[in-house]
Length: 243
Ligand code: ADP
Ligand code: MG
Image (cartoon, rainbow, N blue to C red; front, side, top):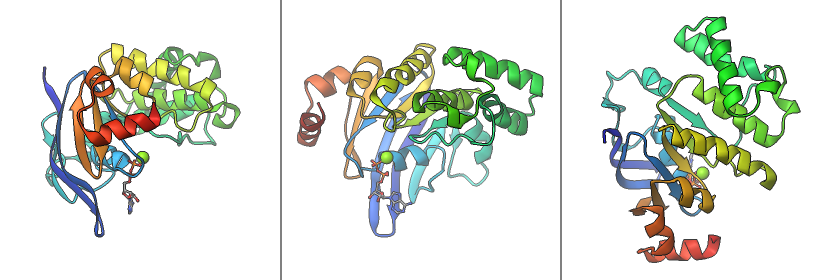
């Protein structure tokens, strides 16, 4: 399988605080990788480094052959291929659902309104919200907002999707609908990196689970190995607390 994301000796410091301490990992096309670990272990920082929302202190990140730290790399072009979904949906409140979704494809990819709307409606259908296209985000539930945020990210036709705790801000009854959309995406072969506390989802959907702590990936294995037979003491401790 083709390598999609290669992270080599990634270090990220905030002042004296080394948040990512020499991380190397490779992710193949179509793989679904879940990242678990204690709060403050650098999960969000790692994800944000993957599209250079956060500037690495040292190391290299290669996405589809493009070296992110190379001055000649057009980072905006790389970012167009990477969708990101956050814990807090970050929708534009003054725009309708449809307008939220068509904005970037029209502005950044030069799609006509017609093309962008057609695609948006297809995506809204996919996330189960076709009837909400004219609604304003404030009138939606958290779970609906998050599904719009996923549709918005997909509208750029990305080939990598990054999720940072996409269900952590949701009421429990909303979580399933969002996870189901993510499962569908995984089935369609999307390369996905997902920071999550949903261990059931990780078990079921992930090809690999990374356990991070203290700025390191302490374990990188299949969900079966991680959840049934964790090797690292800190993985065991963490799982005992959350499961
Ligand atoms: P996680 O997502 O695993 O909870 P984060 O990546 O958010 O962890 O944070 C890891 C560490 O980096 C924390 O100690 C946090 O305080 C620190 N940190 C994150 N972002 C910044 C920032 N912009 N400036 C300074 N410190 C930060
Ligand atoms: Mg985080």
